[in-house]
Image 1: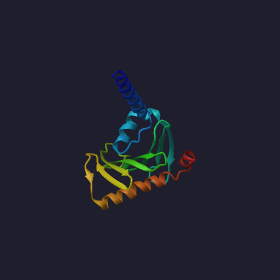
Image 2: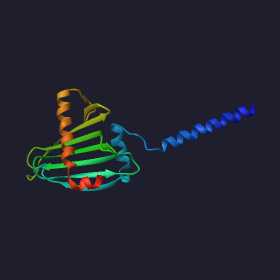
Image 3: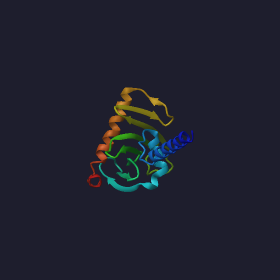
Image 4: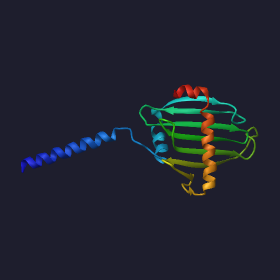
Length: 174
């Protein structure tokens, strides 16, 4: 009886230790969890910024966030013009495969050089999981129209391709 109790206690301790050690491994995050994790842990990331020229009237920049403590990277692409700006944030795995893309489009009611302009913000989320692609509004409403999804998907993939053709960016990832 005493031996079976000791065996049971040892078994419970071993299970507790092994489950705790699993929690210390890099967690595979997906979807909206990536955005939340980055917000909480942004201090763990190193930041590199590069100018992006020729893709908008007022220029732009790409900001790359990397951490050896996380299994994902974040790329922020900002493009500016007179009547707005566009921020497309890519959450990728370490090989730059998309996991989550968050796009904010800031539309001005008149050119930015005129004082008193008002801003309208459009926000969309794009989730990549295996071969699936989902799109959501800022109210977490899923957009199911395949034509709209295809158009937006091509757009965010072109922005990424153009922004990452930057020679400084290529040096950073090689």
